[in-house]
Image 1 (cartoon, rainbow, N blue to C red):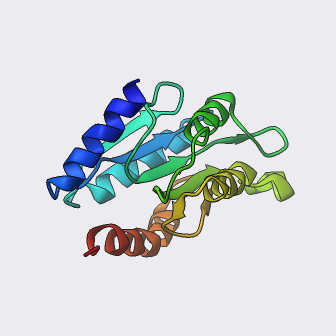
Image 2 (cartoon, rainbow, N blue to C red):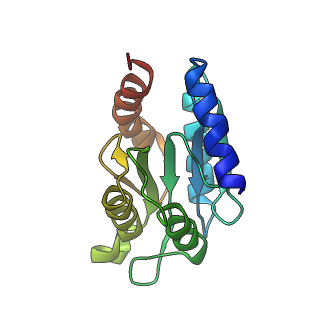
Image 3 (tube, helix red, strand yellow):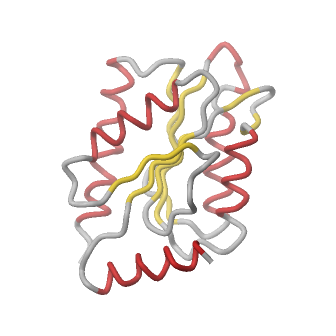
Length: 165
């Protein structure tokens, strides 16, 4: 019921010429994806969009654009919170809902490095989501190099979201 109410509110915002809320949803084990989500929120703060950030364990299902920052554990699996959020979100077709998947992993896991990011991107595309930028995996920390790497996809996403007719 709440999901339906959010969808109606976002539809009404769109009809009034308002932008729907950009949701930044993260799952984390070590706190790195929380740091990433906070950084992303800072970067989009100047965009003329409402923005909300939430842990996947308690997040409401977004109806507007989504930045999803899943955590990887074990042999590249999503955490339980990230998996439940993704399952709930994709239980219905996404009908072109814009999304971007970006997360922090650890290259010491070789083949499993950031596998949850790639898996979540595949699942969202298969459910009919509209990929805003290629999935991005950041190695271990959100350092200056990672922040520089984020600039290009964020600029691309800003142009896509805000320059619509």
